[in-house]
Amino acid sequence: MTGSAEQVQGAIPVTRVLLVEDDAVLRSLIEEYFERVGYRVVGAADGAEGLRLALAEDFDLIICDLILPKLAGDRLCTQLLEQRPELVNRIVVATGDSLTPEATQFLQRTGLACIHKPFGLGELTDMIRERVKRNEAGGTT
Image 1 (tube, rainbow, N blue to C red):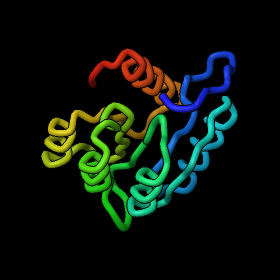
Image 2: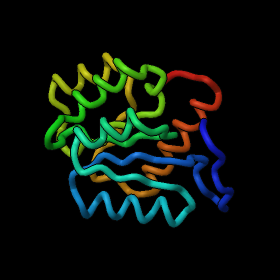
Image 3: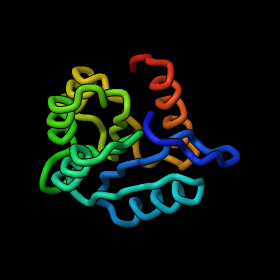
Image 4: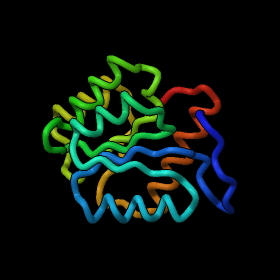
């Protein structure tokens, strides 16, 4: 973990979150929620911007939509893992589509966590807490 998370009652211990999501309403809702509980969120509207930000800055967690303009989420994650494999436990893939065989193979091959849309903010929070615990313990997916 990098930085020091602000201690907020019930907050998830994540300092910086990169949210790569092309749905502006969903991105805004998630950004607002996380900022309200004390985290810094950086949003990216497409995969190319998400990859650029993920490589340029240090994030405690990256939430990445699977279907994105300019650079698909699976390609973004693949390129990111090739350049920064240590981020494997910090990436959560979000998808609203039923998983195609290709997407299922991608997730199995990479070991990335996945959350299915529509998800509730509580469900997302629980997944993030689980990922952070694993990262702190040095565990794997």
